[in-house]
Length: 484
Image (cartoon, rainbow, N blue to C red):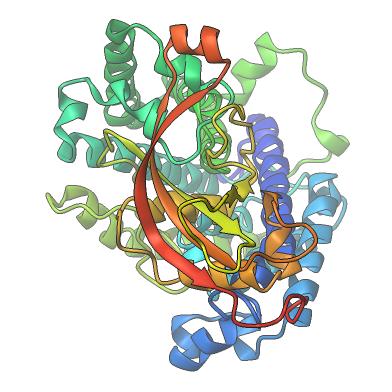
């Protein structure tokens, strides 16, 4: 079946698989760090309570059979260890069927986490990782030529990611059509990065060029990914450069990194070999795929073609939805981002006091997060491709001033109880010895400082206090009563 495999695509497969394994590794490490305080047995939104309200078929996975924090730790730790091994080449060192099993286990373990993660895992890049991870099961290993149908399934996936993002913008906020959205976006995006201040202060004509280039990259270039070579490779290069630009300008977890990796499927391996100093194919033993593998790849290709009806219908709909899964296995999803761009940035700042009763002279001290803006002199940091889920949800919480998210009072209660796992998610705990008596959620309007303000104050942000987002809540139990 020489028609089935493309020997020149070995480099594309290696880059995609090793990169995907590294993203799996970060995702599992994130679960080890964050899942228990967010959705564990004593979490802000406990998984056991969620599972009592849903059917297994609506949230399938190992942890849906019975959740405990210990089982979550085993699943996440096993996933991290397996992902690290695959990133180092373990899947290329074993027979083909074993390699497929390793990729299947990675997918099944992460599916088990996402399906019970609730609001903390309701992000488009979670489903993108699962969909890409499922397709990777059928990408083969170094013992066979990369299967052409699977490469096209990856191209089909990145096509939907890019076109979905482009269409939701064009149909959404009119500032995208007027080429003015980037007047605001670098400042109001969920989690700015270390270069976002400079991106925001680019000349406005350049912002318009950025926006126009984005439309070309997301609305036109994706179709060229399917074109004959070298056009497909040049289209992939445009996608890769666009994603690197987005990586430099903000923190979007692994969305851009994974999209970049998927675009590699459209790169002509022979063309790359002529222009890059590349090693020989690993092992030098690539060959034809066995019949059983070709049959499986064919069946999966048909399955994805059938399931593509729903995302294609969504792409063609004037009422296009963003980041939606159409099945509980998160196969063949629809994607999109920033159909609406906020013009002003609001931040919810959690502040505590140890005064017995707060008054006009009370000194409130702020909790600081790793990624979301807080102290005005703290420079935004680079965290992507790592995902800070609590920081992201705090951005969403600020989008509805005066209407606290249901989980926010529970977060405050954890801080009032001095819950150590929750406090470990924060950068600064202003009450390291004894929890505060009261905590309030205060709403501020943030904007980047101007160049003149930055020279004078050395601050990255200017903020204006607007009032309470959540009134002061009092500690209901003695300090240290919850120290899990």
